[in-house]
Image (cartoon, rainbow, N blue to C red; front, top):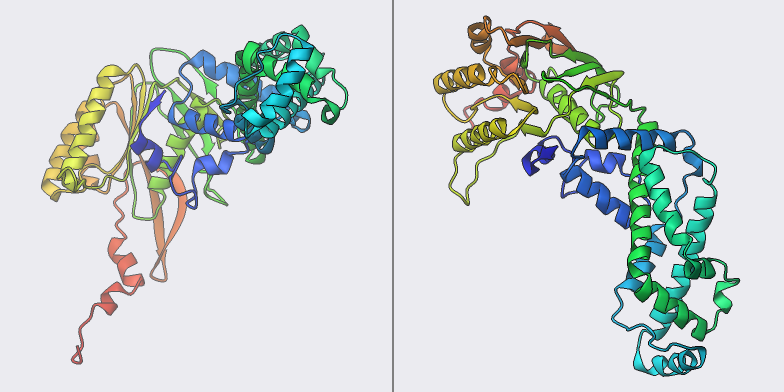
Length: 445
């Protein structure tokens, strides 16, 4: 699935400022920097096929069955030390026998300033990692895993079974190894078997991502979605909610067989935008192989997730707010021509122009989008007149959030309903916030 930076930002999946709440920070339970980097990369480029998602789902399910035993043989501290070891500029030993290596071990102390850090400590750290990895692997020897985990463990076994790697694993006290022996192992680690060992480290990072996702699923009680294959796109969510809401009101949604467009209305603060984001986040989490915040979710594989929730002008390029909105719709048009199934979310079309142009432009755009039955669309709007005009469009279903006023204050239940809303609470909210009163001019001003 392809997702662009604007969609990532609007759905609050990742943010440059980690102080702001975002989905990545919420579900990141990685224990290494390499794992964190891979998870971040996955957020920018989700899994690329239905089969890949299935493999990740099953691997995470395997891990969740007994999460307590999944203590990885690599943590941030050890991983950092191995990085220093492999990025060192110091050359490896060239000697082919014990005596020559002994002489080298003496001369290298003077040739290389980082002799102790690279040749001695670095080699010891690598042996320590191999020992820990072997112990970790032995703990799963009799366990039958699904295909993805099995692939990783087969690759690990192939490297650990190499006679010279086994020799390193079976050494006694690491700290008692002399420099001559360490030079021998350093030659193996950074020369002969460099690619194999770097692959071992990379596999641990991959496992770190899977374990992180399993921990997030368990912590937030996320449920694995069911993917379906077929010509028509599907999104059926039961009791869906947003992870950011502490005590969420859960809502269900179903794009029925012949209706691919949801037109969402309701007053300000009733929950429209949060619900739109909840749907987008659920689609995203499903496409990185994770569980979703819902009782159940059945959906298609979407090759594109696209949102337009918070457009801004672009002063360096000379774009006005309205022109930025137009460009975003143009981007969508290009995507529809390229995608098999796309999931599209808009929060109000054309807020940057007058009401008449907004109405006429939105009407034409919605009518044309609704004809793209290979994709699903969600759009919220305050223009009730739009809904009335679109009422006879067969592919559009109408949902709304409502409210009631008690003692002059709006009360929201955040429950989605079928139909159109004609409520407008903007003036009431301004009144309750004392805005009009603060703007009153008295004789002293």
